[in-house]
Image (tube, rainbow, N blue to C red):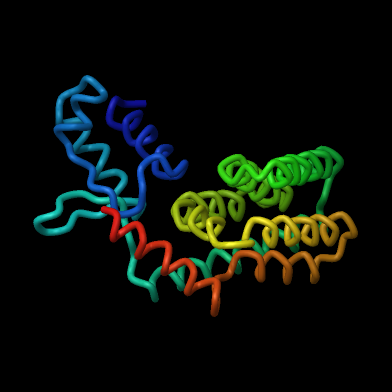
Length: 218
């Protein structure tokens, strides 16, 4: 892995983890100083991130963490919902003992974080939970596509969990998803995952309000 690739991975991880916020400006000089490198590998890393859509270059603003237009963001969530629905359907049909154990453990970790009122901890465990569902579908290509889009949407999924009562709702949805997968009910698992991920109505309005708050604070 080249220096630029390592830097790209580090910056991407920080965006996904929420340590670099949506709308934040990524200054090449500051990043170079922080990582103790020249601006060249930083510039290359940012170009690589731009390909993923996580960052974009804007006139007079430079490189910022991407904040898509509402309709584009909605389209991405719709696509993610369909991908996760497929993962859930296959997982219910193809569940093996190792994946069942991992799914139960991931749900327990979500329950513990929610019970402690730990929103950041819950977000981290939520990410693991969905990754386990992807793996359990036993379709390597589908799992990889789910993982890639999930990372692309990670900053916005984090914002969703900040909405009032959303954490408790998310946990209840996780419990329903696990119940359907363990029961081998592929139709219900698919439906529950789709409903869990897609943003419509009030959920989309809450997400947009969160993005506006970030923009006002920038």
